[in-house]
Length: 138
Image (cartoon, rainbow, N blue to C red; front, top):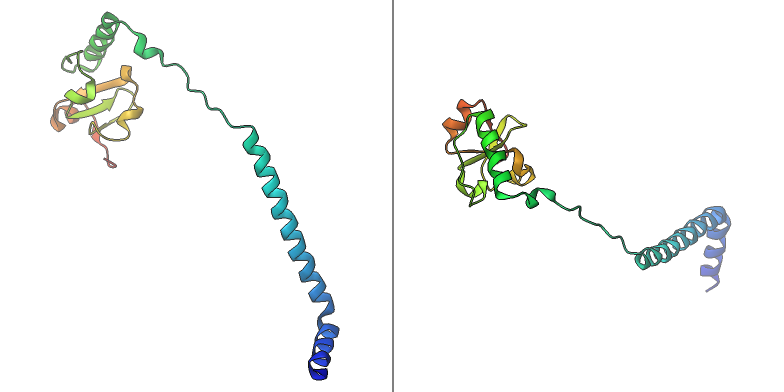
């Protein structure tokens, strides 16, 4: 027992500053963790509310939609589209009038194209003849 106490005392004398420094680091880490947990609980008391803006494009009348699609058809010289069904369900390929790539209708990028900017193509040849390139991601 005296040998163990002697070894502990000798170890303490050699490393006393390092031991105290390590104890200090551990205490600071524990205190920081507790402060973080307390802050986290306070953040949950005031929830973040995300409001979605109103989409006014859905409030267009059928005649306005028809006029928009006709003007698009004339600008890009594309075939007419039946207005009773969505553009993506009739098209083999979809593009935006603001880009130079065409996509498959189920591609994630098609969802980002505004309805007024969508262009429908029945084939790859039709899209390429209008100057569009295939999307590499879809």
